[in-house]
Length: 228
Length: 334
Image (cartoon, rainbow over all chains, first blue to last red; front, side, top):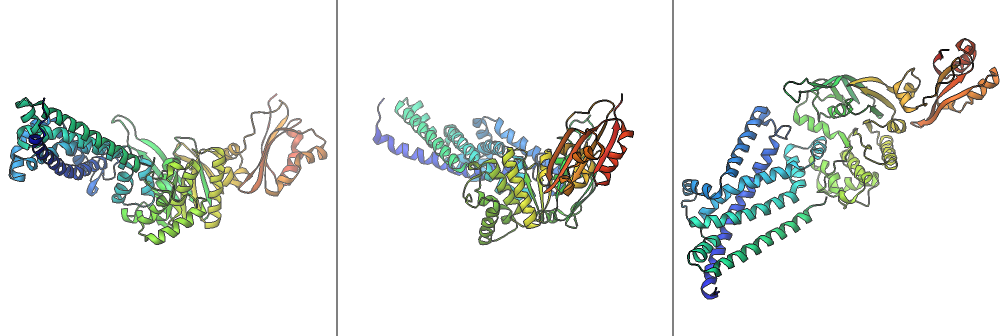
């Protein structure tokens, strides 16, 4: 195994940039929609803050049921299958099914339900007494979501987010096999198909380092946010 | 200040086959302006449901709740939120936000009502000083003791100057010493701010120490209520018995056992000595309790007088004449 840095570095640099791009885009959507769905799942559940939207408990049950079902579908499909199934949708959404930007579509759709469930778990951990206290002060539901639910669950949500980022990294390598680019693609093409172990080893080292860093940063941040 | 009329609350059955749970079965009570009113009862008696109905954290099945002249059961959600600004509440488990400092916790209610930042600062500093936490404003709740957390809860509840404070077992998770301190604080706030306090508790000690009025709740019904002093002079009052347990000693058969209650200045009267002197009888004290109830010295005593009831009519009459309450003298069976 020979590390030919002169040829490898440009390829590596491009691959890392592509991976970074697809994960960043997916992460933005994951945070926005994951939080939103996670909050809705908790709020529309029985005795939740919005268990009867527009005064109708039936609507609450419906929203909760549909969201739960959709999230479960997203969670039950293996990423490689989800990605293939989504190709027509991706084409419509971003105009192409190839490259890192196209890959960010299935990545988002896989990571959103995953993160939404983690957000849901975090929010459920918040003591219902705190919500009651806020209500007794005359807080609006919106204020309770922001100042009680999200504020109290913040450390736990940060840890959930790091788990989601690591999953995204994992998915992004899979996406590489059908034309997304990135380090997964590099490892398969150069490492597997050309039997160049230097690329495989480099990829592995990079992934291990990145995952460790993500986890360390998240743990520190969570600890700083937590005043329990 | 708080008027509750024929309040019912039932919960739907947990299982489809089950029966609905009747937590409150027609509760009525009146809390006067500026008084401390204690509702006592064992767990499951419905007291927690009752207090949570007052600010509609729990929506009653039927009945009316009026706070400061306003019927809360008929107002819209927005009006209810406004009404809640005038009703503070404190909790058994404090329920302070762990993500906020002491000061931020206290300011939470003020943020909700849209008080500007500078005014919030001033008000939170003021109220924290009042509850004795002036120096812990920037601490997080995790750095505080239980009693201090409850002080934060109290400060938060009172920051918006409510007229009424609801206390849901506020001292039940505190040790006896801290309980006393918190009760003293509530008493002070009641006196200084003219705050009306409705509290629920399972601890008779709380009633004894700070309550002007009390009610006993059993099985979702109020079985007894009134001024604590009056209750002590009420025959067969369960609250009086619970406040002053006299033990299980019931004397010797053939003798007369009476229970007397006394309140205020009468408590200083050496009645037992008088009985002995004036009638030449040996009075046996089977049980006695003398304590301060909302700053008045009150007591209960169970006395055994020799001979049957007929022989003791004169001593009992003397006790009654001197203004003491003498409860149901019973002749012990032979």
